[in-house]
Structures are given as C-alpha cells and as structure tokens.
Image (cartoon, rainbow, N blue to C red; front, side, top):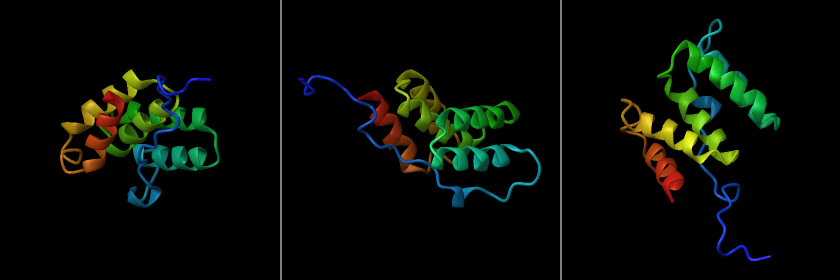
Length: 111
C-alpha cells in the first residue's frame, strides 16, 4: 500500500489543552463541560467529549479552551475544515493571539 501520497490526520498530533489550565468549575459552565470533555477524551470516548464541548460552546461560543479542544477533536476525526474554522476563530481571540499552539494547530490543518 502506497502511503507516501496520502495524508493521514491521525498520524499528526495536535496539542490539546490540559485539564490543569481550566479554572475551577462551579455549576454547568463552559469550564465544567471542558473538564467533562477532557475526562471523556482521556477514557477514549471522543464522541461524548465532542458533545460536552459543544454544550460548553452553546453557553459561550467564544470560550477559548472549549473551542481549542473542539478543534483538536475535529482534526482527529478527519474533519479538517471544522478544525480550521475553530483555530481561525481562536487566532483572533485575546488568549489565542498569545498562544503559539493555536498557530501551530492552524498551520497543521492548512497543510
């Protein structure tokens, strides 16, 4: 099988935002849903993790950490356009302008 000419997004590793960067969640806030998504992602349940992130983004569509990890999971599923949209949105976010991983992940999506 010739793999030189094919692109496999599973082989590329994007940096995911660690749980330690989340503020303490009180109630069902975007932070709460980020922590739930991180737990589900670590246990291998990526579809439930995406659902949790989407719930957090429904509350606050500009939530930095939920948007970041949503982009990473979209990339892992091969949904490059959706991941690119997430990282494009984050590069204009006040935190995203300072975070080199936003630009790294965006560049990886654009390859």
